[in-house]
Length: 190
Image (cartoon, rainbow, N blue to C red; front, side, top):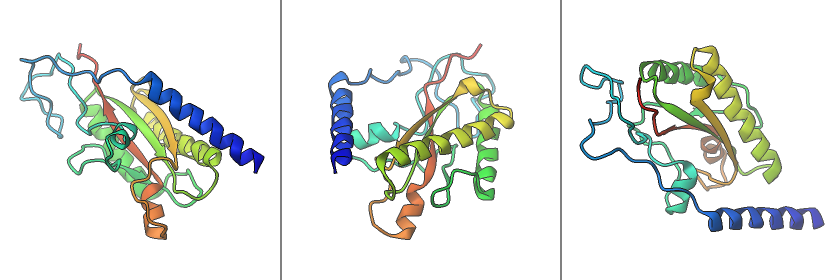
């Protein structure tokens, strides 16, 4: 019981720290700059030289802070991947999705991506944070083998803290065992 209270105190202190320190405002494009690339990566024949905002929207944490369910828009060029219970190895369907994600990233070389590792609610907070980190790292490692520079990819684990579904069913838990790919502000193209 004392361990659980200690964990709860630590988590409360962590979230209080996040709340008090805040986050910098998101980077935006300057007015008058060219429009963002289409999901196919085409920019009307010439490469953009300005930065552009994410086409997948805010991170899961930003969505949760806004009171929204953290999810990837259907229009996103990068698709989520899913995992089996208590596993971080990549299934065949996840590898296929990562191959498609890698193809899009190759066509958009200035884009950087944050890979979010998520878990279902079963297990301790610490265990799920570690499992989410392993899931995000597995996706990153596979994308690197497909030719995506590791410097373009970052990982973060949210463990069980930001579920996309809150029901207590196998179907819901499966939706929460995922990696989400968030496009971060792109570097200027050279």
